[in-house]
Image (cartoon, rainbow, N blue to C red; front, side, top):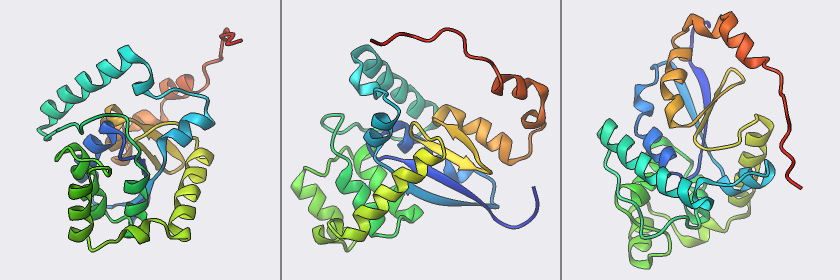
Length: 213
């Protein structure tokens, strides 16, 4: 896999508790990995792939938050859900881009929602966050910020990203918090990724098609 830094694109949305939890585990990746943070609008991915989010299916929504609570407990990560979910993540996504999308910015914005339990619509907390980050509401409306968010979504779709969080490295995607161990194994050169077992999984023919009409 050669020497030097290897680039990994990490696609995420602040609406996603699984993205938050994985953001708290990114320090476990090998030291030679350079993470490029790519905020995307999860709803845009759902629309493109004609899919529903977990919050749109009531039993799945319940399970999602139960599972997230367990995973936060398992990994020792503080999790405080906001007042309601889903919510509009656009202010957070645009703020992230406006501030350069650094790991520090990404971490702070995730923790604003999922550790501190706040939303962009909570004016007092939101204004305090903007002051802390030396940001303004005008920054969120800059045309280049909006365009970068659209570009990120297009790049995600071109890479086959259908959900968040997704890590893309060497043209290979690893979707979801539960793929973290698989991602780390790949980055460490696990021979599984050259195995016949994986090749068979990648070439499994599709059988019946569900009729949705």
